[in-house]
Image (cartoon, rainbow, N blue to C red; front, top):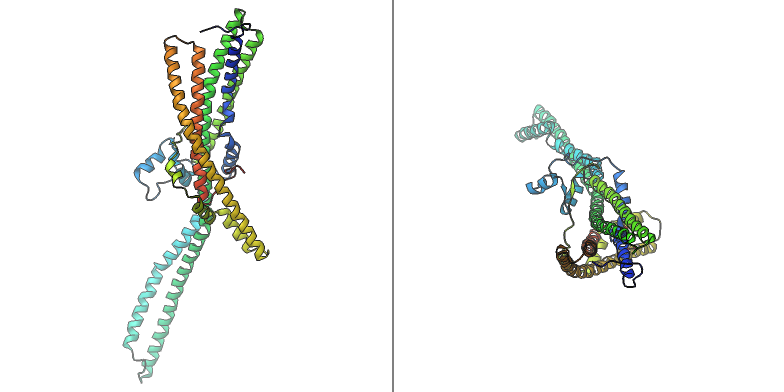
Length: 439
């Protein structure tokens, strides 16, 4: 490997390029896609987490109808991307707290109605009613005997009284059942919206964690490169081919790379703890966090923007909430209609923006995948040259870092596309999270 000198004209630019490359590689994490959402995701997670205490993941019983494979995977110590919806549904403390405050009331009402219908008292009343009806059928209401007429009248009065009692119990049970059904219907929207919002937030955080992890890998390679560059600068200074400023600059680049790693480690720790809490583990758990699968391009092909806009408007929870508010508003009908039209137009604009993001991210994903393959071939060539002693360690580390840079770009493009697809599909279900459309 050729030595770089501070005087020779063709050597100095090479040293400069080396340091610029190291600095750029060390700071790339700050430019990643996950940074667009990091602040909002962390805040969202913290707000949700302060609402309830963590629930151990093993606390919940097996949901009715869940197959063995799904249940066993939920019970292992690995958090997989495709498990997030179930993890939130069955273990998120905030969602469980909502269920615990609503479900018992509904269940108690339904149980009370069922107990009323199956009570021994009601059974006795029905048996008595049947016996009295049989007795009445054997009596002659037109009998000339005063005693017979009095007996019939008394029996008939008892029969009507018992029938009224039966009807009262049955109507009471029906009323309670109806109340429970109304309560279930009224709270279903809240439960559903909460579940959707929490799941969407956890999915974003999961992707953000993996993006930060990819950045951390690159920063580690950049730090190794910076360390090699600093050692090279010191060696060159010892033979008069570099100055003290060259060495100081290389050391500062190394320190910057190490600080970037520390910062990323803190980000990863925060994201990991919030992911644990939002999926039922304790914050200090040691569960493995899985990777984000490649985006499913068939889901993009199935998108129909015009039809999806109508669906998003129909399902929008914010629009439903606005309509409920307007029902009790004293504003004029024209004002109410205008507000609804403006809200629908906003949803349409958001859907169009989400769709364009999907298309743009798909193009970026396909381009990055192509470039990554070329970078992989270059990296493999550099590895062979290094093993054969044709290039030095510094050149090899530069090639390795360049490959990792492209790999991270491809990984982030993949995860960004997955997130864009999720954002679009959540909007179809009525959930448009803050920041999804870049507004």
